[in-house]
Length: 244
Image (cartoon, rainbow, N blue to C red; front, top):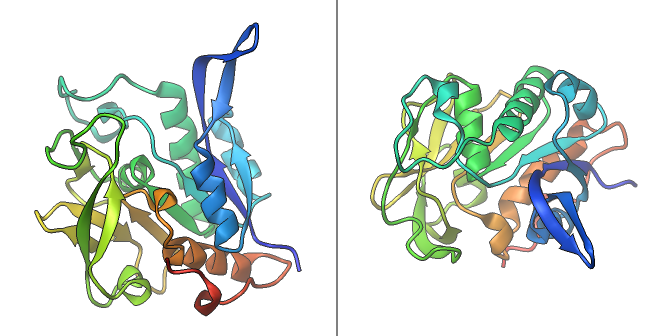
């Protein structure tokens, strides 16, 4: 039985060295597709495309992962730019927000990771806190801190206990987007996970980086939801997933 096909968003670096060649490159850290594969899915990378083609692209996959990366431009949630907010990623913002809109419209299961969670909140009309301290202490190195699930949520059903997670971000959810609920908090009150509750399609965002961990429970749940939607059938059950 074919594994559910999970699309992962990518970004374009202005120039990457290939021997004697300098070429723009569409990429994403390999940990993303490794986590999809470890959780029972097949991974395909989705480079930026024309936003109007988002629905067409989503017809070819069973689930969507919106990867981490630079700050979402505050123009998308009607805020003035904070001096600590990163430079705009205009092409990526347009593509990923179009993918999220198409996924929400079609019922495609979605997992947003870090920036992807923030983009999910913005896609549903929410806003972001443009800078917080304490969640990205050392440049380029993920920290770890505990997050607490909110009882009764999809996330709590998967991870019912407080868990240490790898984190690297300086922005966070402020006002929730429509229909979203918070499903986990950091100990300082920062929103660490959001979701659309049942009976809505499977849509979850996490502020941390599960691709840097060995816990596949959240990704396995995405793949199970994607498999239920796939014409090829369902994947293995969550009880078969590695939990680190």
